[in-house]
Length: 365
Image 1 (cartoon, rainbow, N blue to C red):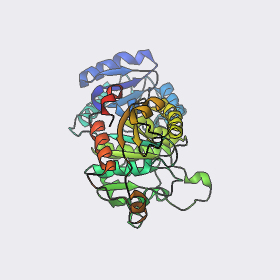
Image 2 (cartoon, one colour; image 1 turned 90 degrees about the horizontal axis):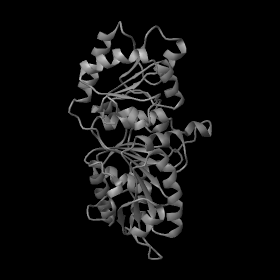
Image 3 (cartoon, rainbow, N blue to C red; image 1 turned 135 degrees about the horizontal axis):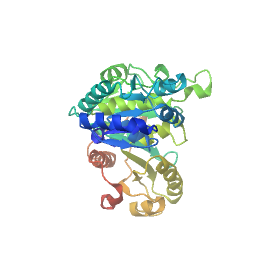
């Protein structure tokens, strides 16, 4: 659901439907009714969300992240549990209907203005490795460097830090362990100023210090959602380099992404592993495609890799000589004519158009 698609109404109480319909019509917006949000993308994309107490409880159970413009609508004062659930997913206003229809109209008019402010949301790309060592982190960094300005989110707290890939390990700025985000709305300028920047990339990297307990190194799903939303809302591409192990943070990033990229090397075992990863990723987001990387020791071509994995191949690239030494000596320096840069440009151009991947077979390189 795009921000201009309308108001997501999650209201069980049918007595509330007529006043809601009147107000939404007066605001010039469309109603989309559901028992629960079908995905985090639908949740994040609505111009505003109206929910009652029962729906608020369901949204908390589903792990919906906090967001702006969520209103709790009731015919009478809600119970404390219902209000707490609504607040947990972002509600800042209670509207009693039908007596407060004017207040609801004001809130929805403001939401319509915000949704139509002319700022195009930046695309969100989630990058996963089909298996360890496939080069997903390098490809995620290349995607981020290809854009004029971007946000690169390190979604693997055990990966050693994505700042090393960009050669930004000595750059000042916060890393994930330094942030205390419970979700909610973040200012992109404030986020950009707080984080390291390299080659036009605002980088939120994992750290390299083990916290007091292993689990405390994990990244909170709501924090990931808030960072992604801040960059995308500002019109900036957001690239998420994700861990292959399931977690709430990884699944949140997958669910809100416009495109999921699975990076694999061109051999049978890697493609078999990538096929398993693809099935898991598709449970969160069906908009998933493959980037195949050489060498191909058995002569496996990109189209063969796509058939083995069961997803379209969006780009293929030859091995890039010297990339390992470059990463160890100053970080990635993306030159425009390299295989990595060409593949990154192809994917970034693709996601900027938000294509239907079912018709992407012609993109196989």
